[in-house]
Length: 58
Image 1 (cartoon, helix red, strand yellow):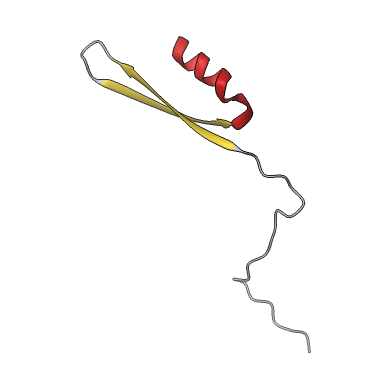
Image 2: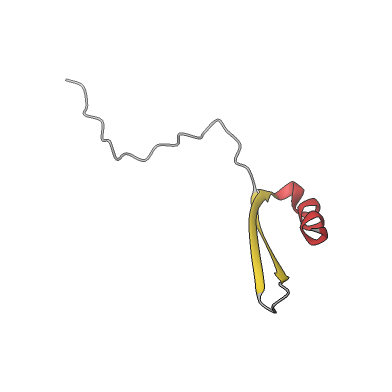
């Protein structure tokens, strides 16, 4: 008889793929009424500096 396969077995499904390195960017800006607004964005680690420059310019 064949061995029963567990549905909860931990398997390495992403073995052949390279994982992406991600970073979370949080930018604070002050509104006209004095309150702060926070914007967050997930980007790839290689483009962090470009995204920070773009977020500060906006």
